[in-house]
Amino acid sequence: MNKYNEIEWDDEIWEFFGIDDDIREAWDKRFGEVNVSQCLVSLREYLKKHPDYQEKIDGYYGGNWAIFIYDALERNEKWRKEEEAKSDGS
Image 1 (cartoon, helix red, strand yellow):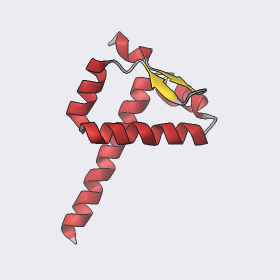
Image 2 (cartoon, one colour):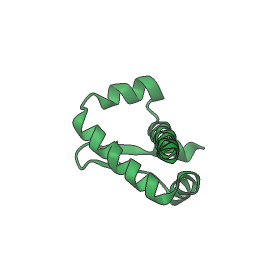
Image 3 (cartoon, helix red, strand yellow):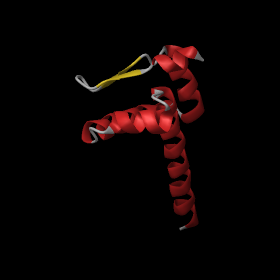
């Protein structure tokens, strides 16, 4: 589990580092490769627009970027499922 703590965000080039292949493969298997890719792009855009992100990451996620990303993936999945249910009910 220590690998997960090594994920970092570089705010100069707006990129995540330390998402090893095994971590990415686990996320892709759980959430779908396309969904993970889209979520990472969305997170990148969010972080660009919110310069106070580090304070939030430290406060809500103990500074752990992997937990932040995983939480975003879970919220995104929940939103997708709710949207699909709405579409099926129409």
